[in-house]
Amino acid sequence: KNQVEQSPQSLIILEGKNCTLQCNYTVSPFSNLRWYKQDTGRGPVSLTIMTFSENTKSNGRYTATLDADTKQSSLHITASQLSDSASYICVVSGTGRGSTLGRLYFGRGTQLTVWP
Amino acid sequence: NAGVTQTPKFQVLKTGQSMTLQCAQDMNHNSMYWYRQDPGMGLRLIYYSASEGTTDKGEVPNGYNVSRLNKREFSLRLESAAPSQTSVYFCASSNLRQGFNSPLHFGNGTRLTVT
Picture 1 (spheres, each protein chain N blue to C red):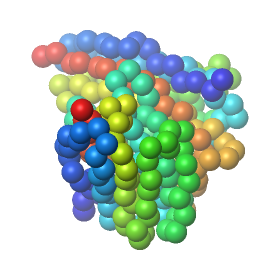
Picture 2 (cartoon, rainbow over the protein chains, first blue to last red; picture 1 turned 180 degrees about the horizontal axis):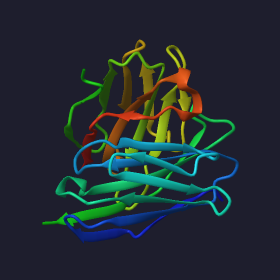
Picture 3 (cartoon, rainbow over the protein chains, first blue to last red; picture 1 turned 60 degrees about the vertical axis):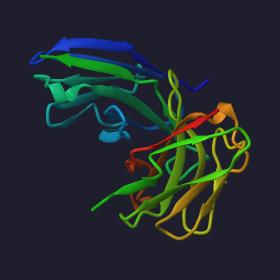
Picture 4 (cartoon, each protein chain N blue to C red; picture 1 turned 45 degrees about the horizontal axis):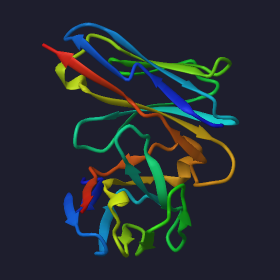
């Protein structure tokens, strides 16, 4: 069964600290892996998209890593800010039939809270 | 540049009532999608439209209909609302020309409560 599991479910850190969010998936065949940030009351916003050949991708203070062999990804946030408080969603795209993006499998998200 | 705009932002319906959720994008994207987001669950695809004039069912299409009015607009209709349709609905679009690596651009959602 194709699944995307994220951990931890929630996380609280102090402003300025670093943190790492995890994503494990069983989707096969695999096309790409995405990380989205969703602020409360807003729609998700794309942070990164990585194909199976990419190991690391950065977007400002956000760095995503991908190990396609072990089917694991992480999102590292450096020097956290209050505005980083949000839900972070891991999305895996499988190839094959379905929408033009292939079939998308959404994780349930990690709720990050940054305290001052 | 508004991106993806959804209306209304909030709606309360009684069981059996009907309504249409509106979505418009100004990014000239070919593909548009409707998702629902429920507590403790990942986003689930209701319907999508790969291009103007085509629509297809997603994972959870029962109880919904869609219309791709033109390239910009994609509406979602609930013909007879049920409490199980209480959810947050997100419209999204993507650039077909980018293929499988194209990011989704989401609207800010419609929060629907069915009593």
